Length: 85
Image 1 (cartoon, rainbow, N blue to C red):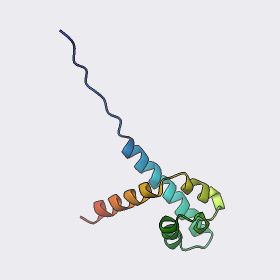
Image 2 (cartoon, one colour; image 1 turned 120 degrees about the vertical axis):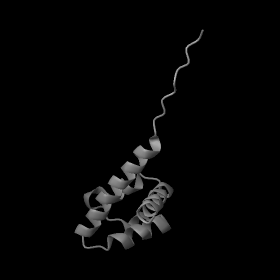
Image 3 (cartoon, rainbow, N blue to C red; image 1 turned 45 degrees about the horizontal axis):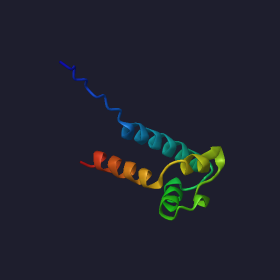
């Protein structure tokens, strides 16, 4: 009789979501420290894809460019939905 093994699933989505949240916090803080309206700058980047919206201060530009823009928007929408039920 063969033993059935349970498949363990690793939820990479949750890990990615946490990574995105962390990077967004770091980028937001860096933009604020430089005197920018962080929300407007991040929205500009997400809409256009132009990294010029994000300062290179504290490697904010490099950090946000490592993320998939669609993934960022998904996390933002999920957080919005969770916080507005």
